[in-house]
Image 1 (cartoon, one colour):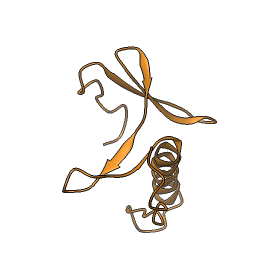
Image 2 (spheres, rainbow, N blue to C red):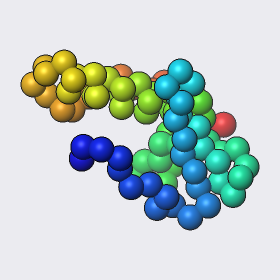
Image 3 (spheres, rainbow, N blue to C red):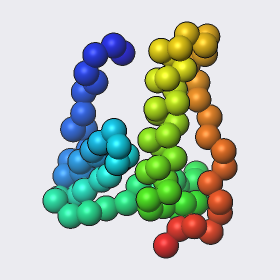
Image 4 (tube, helix red, strand yellow):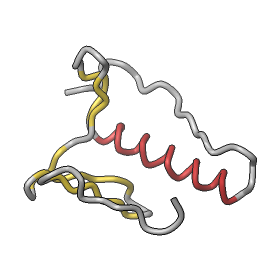
Length: 85
């Protein structure tokens, strides 16, 4: 898992990241949103707050690894329900 990871596995979808802007996604060149969907197919949360949360968890996990804190798992706090569009 060291080095560049393969991407491009979702046809038409591009997830991009800019260190000071966070995650964004496009599908077939048009803006899209990230979502959290439960096992019943219900949208729990979607939009910019999901992208911010995913980006923050990824950054925190990497920082914990770099700091040698002895764990590789990073958990977020619950996203407020009812925030989906």
